[in-house]
Length: 563
Image 1: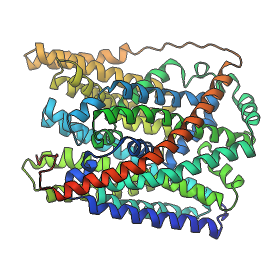
Image 2 (image 1 turned 60 degrees about the horizontal axis):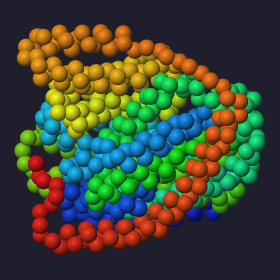
Image 3 (image 1 turned 90 degrees about the vertical axis):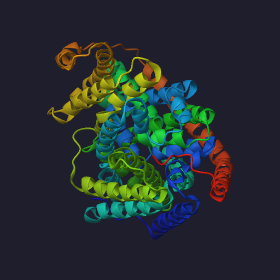
Image 4 (image 1 turned 180 degrees about the vertical axis):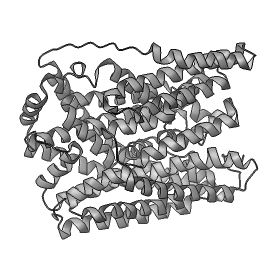
């Protein structure tokens, strides 16, 4: 239970912020006239505001909580996860892998591609898997973030979840009215507040604890495993392979991220957004890892519940006024995530499950109404799931696994469809089903943390095998009986093909120096690129408004067809 340590000044800061962001979000409605504006902002999002919107959507209180939890549990070794994320973003951005093709096709959702390539039934299957995985992933956000607010503000536990419900309803109101336009406007302002909060927390980590104390605590509590990822059983090659594949899938087919590719001005802008976002993503992960390590050091290594360590630390060290700014920044992070996720996942449900099942042409206003209703229903599910579900194991791994329910199969089916001439609808089916089936093992084993890396790699291996084998069978095997027999054999072969390969090495202070350099680079990149994006992003927003108002006065048809 948190102490009532919030002052009137702190509450006033939070209240002013919430009122201001609600006003800006509702104002976005004036720029929305049809489904195209609602879902992809008329494809008018520029580079700098695109960077801000993408990073803001992928940062919430839950992001900081699970990354800080990893810092408490794994020490500096956890930084490996941030490095992989940044490298994948930059690689995809520089190459335009998948995202460039998607933008050229002027898609609205990822499953829309599956109908063009594999048929409407495959699109519906992808939509269902995405809706289930995305909703289960999103559904735990309120309870985790309620823990943070309970500890830092002192709101009693019996009221804290209802506080989160109110917060979701505020976001729901402007997201359902203004869609992607409201998401972009509010994300811009929220990111400014969020950046200030991140810098303040990092400063107080060094001011209250100090770098040497952090290093000594990790050395004492974890030994070499707190620095060297290859000496830790949770990390090593399996973790690197799984995380690389998972982030390749996240960056290319994760609905909230893909929505930024669909909303951008052109392919060149998309590639730049993802490249520069990669550098910001390093700070997004590494700085919260540092906060968790600082909390561990501050608490003397005595942490009962790892995910509660960082909010306890912040409650104790942040002074009046500063803690109000930090909580406002954390709320800014969550609200931008809620708005982006509500829009992305609800658009999957409406555009890729509901509308294809209707099987008839609908008026633009009817489609817009369906989009808005699905936002409302998704928000209701999030509230209910968050009230009752208990996460098994580390939060980070739960979120990665719920995403993998559809990510593994969707990723290989998309890559095969875009870059392999023999890609077949049977391969897409097998990839989706095999990937989802392997991922579900995580929810069946007694101690999922011990199996995370293995299950993660297996799900991508199974989905890849399903895509290749299914496509080849679809092309060359005519008999349905033979097709079934071959694919049934694969179900037996895939688990037998999984192997454990482990190796370790020790390099003394090497890893301490590596993570020190990563921390400095992450901080400098986060501050400099964020400042540039905030300044330039203001011009992007004005240009976006001009484009949307110009479209509003133009009688030409929307770029999104009423299919």
